[in-house]
Length: 255
Length: 329
Ligand SMILES: Nc1ncnc2c1ncn2[C@@H]1O[C@H](COP(=O)(O)OP(=O)(O)OP(=O)(O)O)[C@@H](O)[C@H]1O
Ligand SMILES: [Mg+2]
Image 1 (tube, each protein chain N blue to C red):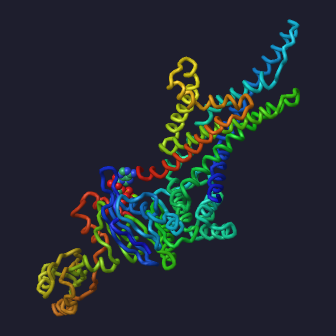
Image 2 (tube, protein in one colour):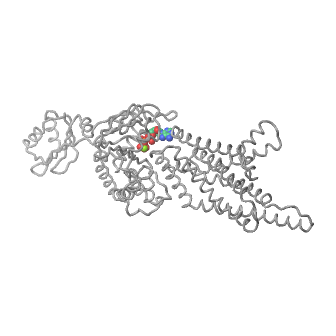
């Protein structure tokens, strides 16, 4: 545990001493801010139109703002994951510092966990910025906070999966760009698999759409904690971390 | 302290280390010598559990590198070929980080950091970013991180590469002073370094063990024949070198005489003879012929020549490159 903490703090510090963390935080906040603005605006416009027509449909902040925004967030996240994970191992391999880590009395899994947790922590920081926007909703409206909390849990779990996959890919190369591009490719695939179910009903389509990370986010976005989706995320996280530590081992055979 | 048994490493097709065995006793400094590509770095990487061997094994401080890698790692300080530095950290926080990785307790930490900064003279770059250090300072910080947890065994891959002459001497002194409590294996191309710092030499070439012995034994072994340098001066201001040469050649036991340098009244000769030929005979012959004997000096064969002798048959080009490097330094 102590070793995980040592690696975790070192990684987190290296995110924050370089511009990368600030860049990601800012970009994430701006992009989400844009979506938030559009969502609020259309909500308000929609509400006024209804009033003018004299209809009084029930307006629900949770359903009409929070839920689509959470789905947006889960997709925006896909684009940021590669930038968080690409350097984790690739950079250590390139600069030779991996030799320091692997000749220190640490287990491979401790190194992997420390690095992954640091990536998750950075992502949590990014999510915290977006939650400021939602705080604004609580100030002016009266949404239900529980679905929102579950939505955030889902975002965290989904990011945990993709970060684990990205960490794994980062062990496969000493080139950050390659690691980043490959992770980006995988993230996109795990997103577009979701659409396959829409135009095909074969078993393969079912399997592919089951594999999609974003499909499993739907229940969280609705504010429902579905066990099967939570299990999917937990499995992918564990599997990703396991693969990463195996890859570290075999990395020594190959390098 | 270190015992290497039939250690072998094969990279896809290329046999980098080929069944190497040797032992290192506690407190010894062992020089690991070989031309470029001989397999020094590969061997060290296996000893530090960075690379698993393809066959064979080794034990460090009584622990097997395959069975108990964590115990081995705890007892080793390792300076890789390229110092493993994080450019975004400053020297002090880097050393603190490594110390914690190696299991130094929080209470000992400031003491250890201070100690290694002094030992490796990096006090003046304590707060500088590692990415901004010069090559020599990077090397020193690399050495500092290797000794930070006061390990039993130090494995140093070319510890003096890139240092200035003053720092090379300080580093050699440092390494010598660490011996005794620590067992040290260092690799190098610089032969005088081995003569100065090491008690024992392990020479490998193309992955194969060529020789392991003490520095003295190796020197005398390769010497076989003894070489003397003799300076002879004529009494009356000039000297007939040819006459001196033929007189010297008549001494029993002398196999070869060559004139190295000739001034008006003096000549420097190199005499090669069987081991233990009588120096008295030589001196008497010179004096009785009416010349003065200015100098009579045995010249030990340098480790460089031994090294070339041992590795030349196998790999002449690499050995020459190495000799050139050795001479430069
Ligand atoms: N990662 C690797 N993959 C394949 N072959 C390698 C690898 N690393 C080293 N080799 C090969 O193994 C052999 C030994 O290399 P090694 O680095 O151990 O030599 P060395 O004695 O340290 O040389 P130098 O004096 O140049 O540092 C070389 O032929 C090299 O090409
Ligand atoms: Mg080397």
